[in-house]
Length: 376
Image (cartoon, rainbow, N blue to C red; front, side, top):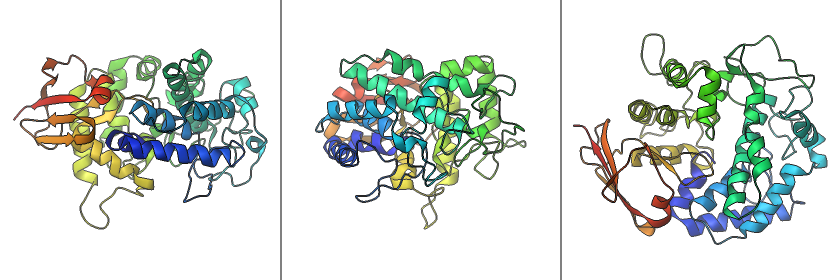
């Protein structure tokens, strides 16, 4: 849901809708449980969180309509609100826990997934993933004319695992205490990533995240340190305190600068990662492609676009790599005079100057001509 499903729906909404219906069919045939990582026609339970919610909500936002979205929403909502026996099972844990929403009753009671009793792959990671999923369901509810206030409230529960004393996301126990000793480079409480990476996993509330960090300038300075080594060079993996482009939990992070009023740094960071960690040879992808996610990230980077949140059709703008790109089926044209230069001079949508470094959903919904003027 961090790139692949949105790109699929942007390029081929009919195919995305068919995919969404297949996911729903599998869930209905599986007692209502949505698997995290469907392989061919079977469940694997791999990874953490409830990724079907942002995947379905994101595809719908991007224009997929040929699936039973109300049935999908109802099914996902039930799994997010009614505890299922699988949620108390440790079978397959940590990497393949059976529960779609592990120990949901306790999660709803505490407002976070406790490390010692969550039956999940990392309590802090589960909390962050579920906050993204709940935001997605809240967004989908609004699109369908359903009440989403409680889900919206739950989307803010990422704050319950943010420790103001350390300034990082940190696992907590059921009694409310923090799991110690704490090291932001550790993956204790997380899944295939460190606290330093997961702390940024609040794409739906960057303003709130900046607030708890001490303000936008503080957050931007922390991002600078996250993306650069001590000598000023770009961090491209191998340091758990810094950006890891080889795995999904942090791949949205380069675009966070846009939310902090630093769009030039988004432009520089996206282009640097595309240039430094992607290659044309057999080992050209940074890490496992994971069903197309890493490839989709690069396509978005090349277009100079990226979903602002997993469940929205608003698109962040960075610098396109090509002077012209067209998404014919959607009536979208991206012009970038000066490409492949990096820095953006101005952005115009159908001739109108854009004040924000992201585009409204109407661009995806109705199409248009995006002109990104680059500094040569």
